[in-house]
Image (cartoon, rainbow, N blue to C red):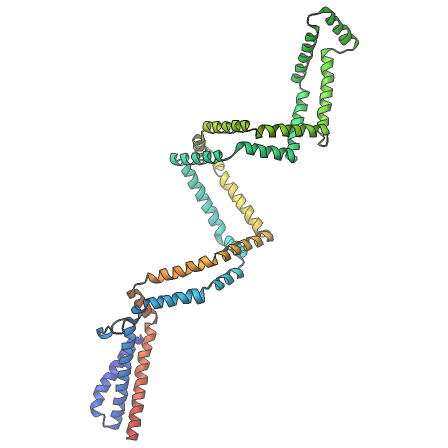
Length: 414
């Protein structure tokens, strides 16, 4: 090590000076004595100066332990260098702007991030299922569900839903479904029997037990006009089906009128304050009847029952993995996705540069402040101490040469 070399040189020149000094009047020994003396003085002075950086040489406290005494200045200088020259806000912004974050995401995804994310999600799902078996967690989940449902205005949802159904294709699809069902009912034997009973009831009310009216019904309706109850119902069913078929046309005026009438009736009903209160009270009542904790427990038992096919237990994870793969594939193949992602990430990071730069400064200061005086001295001495010992070596060598040169000048001048 340079420290040992420098110390050895200092010892050698000191011994050399002590040996040659008594014979300094002899030219060659005087030359060596002057060289050894200057080398000794230079080496000792440099030893003192270098040692004073780290500790107290010879126990002298004045102007020594320079690094420990200058700790704040050193730390301030290092901090300013890092945040003011190396990691400036402009440098951080330039680094962010030069990156393609979409490519970085794809790169890390291919290098193992896919497996890590899926593993994380699997572990998260396992933790969620384990948590479902805890009664305290079940109580909290139940409270959260009920609290959020209570915040939802059911009558507003119904109004919005009715608007969507009536004003969009959903309304027409619902009408088509209802018309088709009514059409099926109109051709059913049950509906036919109901109509027959209704016609018979009308006839009975008309006759009211009078023979004359019964005779008229039998002669005129049943015999001459062939309008028995069955025939009347058959003709009614034909007309009903024709009318229902006409309503299947979305441009039919009667259909549009009927649709508007239904919409208006629903809107009036839902917007009535009394009805609103009834709907909300019904919601609260239904919530009280909900056994959410039992549902959660049954859900947990189902997915942890050993008798259940393992494929059933994996359905959630398979579904999630499938959608993750689909999302990753779309991201990889759709340039607009990648471009938008890159823009959004850069926008977020650039907006955070100022606060992040302050965090960097704080981190640098905090980490530097973790060093005690002793640790700081040891760090500097470990990293630069060996190189500093070259100053001692050079001081001895240069001092010796200067001493010899001074001897020669004084010898020849004198």
